[in-house]
Image 1 (tube, rainbow, N blue to C red):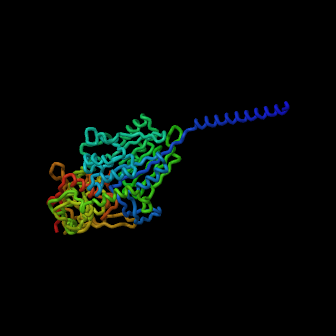
Image 2: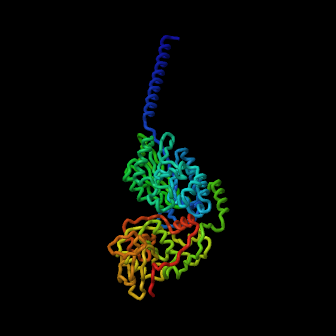
Image 3: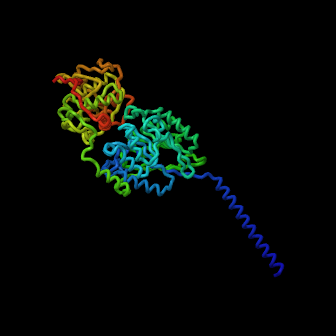
Length: 548
């Protein structure tokens, strides 16, 4: 071999080694650069709110096309929800949290199976994190504690004092989960109306919503949570207030007000979604992080997934559900009554009603208001129910419309105008039944007349003179005059308060501090009769006197 050839070979080898060395250095630099680049973490949250025991699919009015036109569709059902959760879980691997924010223990599955069916099927569907709603306590903490034996998800009770109660050890103040290196902290917030909207008994609130949120954020951050998620049962408007007042919450998944957030709500650094009611949609929120594992507010994706009949049912869930359906008794008995319940049309619209008195008195006692006023048309059934069992279907028939109970402040002179409206509607659905108040109507005198102007605004044309006596319970067993300038706490229903039903515009126009309890006649009566076993209307006591 010539020297020249040898030199060429050495030069070639040296060049190859040089190129390889350069490539190796570049690879090392590239890897080093990659290792220094922040890793983006992803998390998907899916869930529901306020299923209300609606485990079966049912026909609901929905606007699937988003054109403002609702149509009847076969929607919801736990077996379809389970199928969607399975599909998303397979897509997202272990980076998924499946949540409920409560009010699931309701209606016939709850009355019959005391939570076993609902919690067992929700567990099979894949729920892993649960925040109690107020209706979970409708049959008392003991029934809820027994139901939790069938729950395979973690329960939160951040603002509930459960120490020394049957719920001690069954729920956590907060939870931190590791999703592929991303630590996510969860805590819960209960409606501050908890003491009077359900039967918490010895379970009490241990702080206000804002106090709870501040405390939970501090504890979760101190324990290493990268993201903080609040599961709330307080309503959308309250969620927004919490987001404004409490920094450090990344995501709020809420319920209680039965709202679906059609678009993702952002307040400061907090994203808010709400889960609606009865399960026609599954809520999905996809988020990712930026530097320091902080929530990247530029990348979230939000979706309401329709739970339609196009979604195949999860077979195992559908099979278990069918077993519970087949085992339903012919009638779901909640308790009994020793006297008939007269809800015939003439009785309920023509004068004082024992059943309306029963409902109104319970509302006044439960919510601590001064006066309850509900229109006769809110009490349905239209027949006499004989003494005997009080059934689930009976209460649903009586509360056909499912209006929510609202409380509000109203000055006495407006209360008098409202009563004059009632006096003008004796014999019709607008006639008012009351509690905490008694009044006399003289039908021979001038009736109030109202009308609507060109813009649909109600105006009083004739004030009316039919109400001759009005007295308000004074809290000590006596009666006092209705004082025109005094403010009274009034309770009525959403038909009257929000929709000016039967022309009762005063409640919406002049009422203040309106508070929706999200409780219906049905839920209140079911709670009472389930706990007492017997529900007997008393005799009319003269609270509404009509001079004919």
